[in-house]
Figure (cartoon, rainbow over the protein chains, first blue to last red):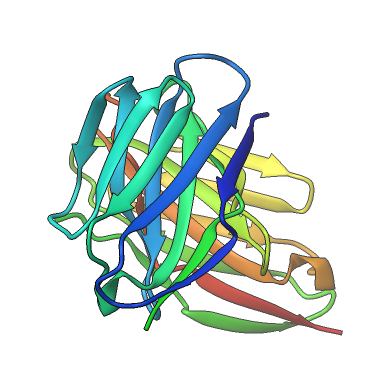
Length: 112
Length: 113
């Protein structure tokens, strides 16, 4: 199994402030990486996925962006947070579709 | 837009009873169906990855079946225990690439002692 680190665990930010959430993966190289969000009252929604360094695919138009500067590092960012960005953010990895995805501990983001 | 529907939304079950719940997904362009258990304050934990029509998988007291032609999967828990209390998520993946999972909203299971 894989170990996925996410930080911070919780974050409270004002509307209009920037955001940077980081995810790192221990273990086998060249994982597929994913960012998911669970907003209040909704299911987990895929935001971004990456199959390699510098390769990012976005599932939904939004206020957020993602980057993969290193093989096992995935960063979620925003220049200006909106209230609707509040939610629980999970980073995940897999090694070969459709195999199991492993999830990190998550970040609870509250935008006020 | 893919829709994955799970029912019921929540379920209260007496300890020792068996239970089951449903996941419905689009039957076209099927690639795999995942089941996860998500306990409060923990990360989602993988239960099963199912790819073949008619697949049946088992892990202890939990089992799952898959019907890709009609687009549904059932998760069964036999002899429920308090530690089974969690949200059970199913997720669907299409195609053959590294696309992420499309999740249902989950079934929130509470086992009452």
